Length: 362
Image (cartoon, rainbow, N blue to C red; front, side, top):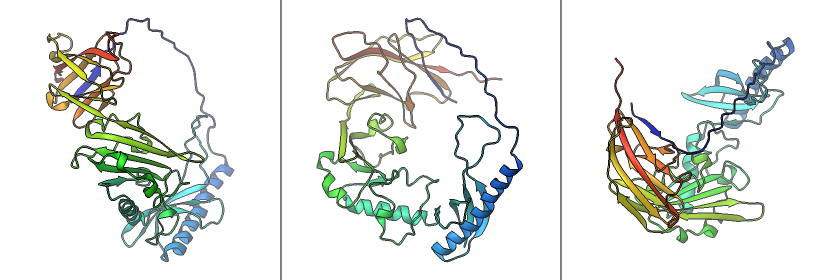
């Protein structure tokens, strides 16, 4: 198993603050009234879910499970948290399993389910791609979650019931390839598709278009996982009265198997330094000095340089952060907390890459 770490050398005093605290769990068990209420939620919710599906789809499903839903508020630790008034009902019909969430505090036919999930997602994507022919692919990070449910019945032409300007789940990622995002017409797109948030990303290669790892909360400040593969990105987001946007360009420099990305078109100078193995960190695979007038710099180290049983250490100047990201192809760090070694450049620092074989325990 490969391990990674970044050594931090900061010549400042470390302040240790230890606060003693204790958390007392509130409650020693449910009262009789609470148990009755919880059971009632399940009983009423089960009946509501059956009635909801019968009225919405016209068939009677088999109930496989009924569970109370807990809001997850842990501000007051308790061994006996009270559930919300909603329940989650697992169902099955004609070999298809699905879930319904519906109130259980009173009779209701207002719920959400994922019975038509696959049909809805396919339709939404096809609709958006028709609205933006330049796009190679589209991702709906909140709508495509396994836990997302749908209220309105899918008719095949009710796009606005699922993606619109008022639903927080209406977040769209459009993937373009070698198409300048300045050619993207927002006015034309929003005449067909309303949204809460829109990301348009211009990739370098149609065969390498990974979705941002944290796609549900992606921002222009969190593109490190896809920076090696993209040229540009723009974010459109709604405010009360308008649609605003932020954009960035990504510039790539390759040097000695390394990849450096910046968000400013500035020259990046790399100098190879003498390498020296370390008894503590192992073999030095490379030593470099980087200089550029770009402010934000990401350095990507290919995993192909390492064996599977090595511990990887990167020492950066006199201070560094931990390796901030890794995917199947790279380890990565940036210069956010690095002390620059010269005032002649905006970003300038040395870094050394080490690999040490991990001894197997006998």
